[in-house]
Length: 382
Image (cartoon, rainbow, N blue to C red; front, side, top):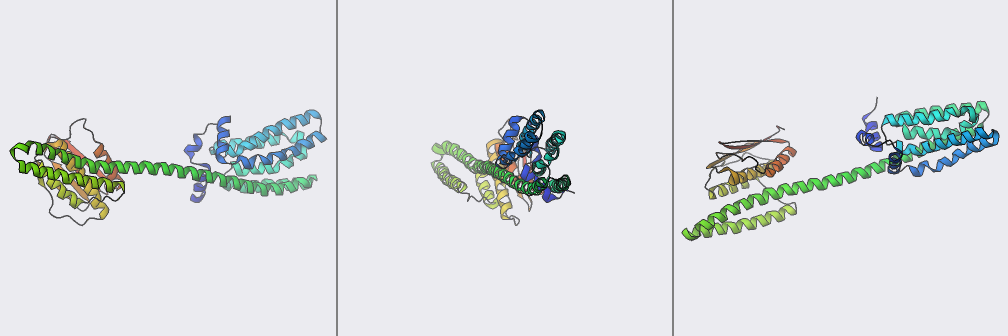
């Protein structure tokens, strides 16, 4: 049975099944895979040893047979060099390639005779390059032992030595190729992780800026409109609104700077206090809890973002007269009696909040209609 460690090792060396299946089985695709594997440097030099049986064929046999052997071994050399690229393909393709190499060698028995034993080290390398490691080692050892016995029986001691040397070389070269392929896969994985980390950080910063700046800008807009209406009727009230605008701008600037440096901390308690002020400015009766249950820092921060987004939407869209905020140990809800979220309204804030809640292991539910909107977050309900 295939162990988990073996499966993970094969995946790291050859890539995922999806990556392997996506490779085109074409000359260009195989060449690209061979270059990606980093195994060409190991596979090309041993091809020079194929000249050995070709020389024997030209010395011992007639010209037509020697020419046939040269062509067949040339084809085998191409197949052998391509094995480092085929090693990145699915198992079915690798097995077919291995079978083609093996059948081509067996087809040369009538014309090459005992000299075929000199090809043992190449066939040993195809074992480690194309077969899963748990298959390659025992099958390679069995083949090499068989060749050694045949070499002794047929009186070809050089072939026996090559069999032993080929086994050692195949082991070393196969291991080197697999290590190189592993290094290539690790570098590719590191590059993918770096790209994903950058994308995740951009998304986080985007959510934070929306939650921070959107809330502050909404409060500024309401305060500016109110100050303009009060400028002639009640200058003192207008002055108070201008002071509130100045304080909000300063806070927004501090929030943006803190977010950029990764130091922004949002808490449910502070957001409830801010919500009471903002809702009161626009004339919405706020019903908020006077005390909060004990909350972990991460949960207090998440609930703070939920309250901020909910209050921002109430001020922007609801036209409500009453809003209620409820906080439990594992849930928070914001409800109003307004007209609901308009059809076609931009919901980027809610989408960002939903992603934040889901990442924390919770579920966001938004129920909106003509009688109002209720935004609820429950932890552990994803």
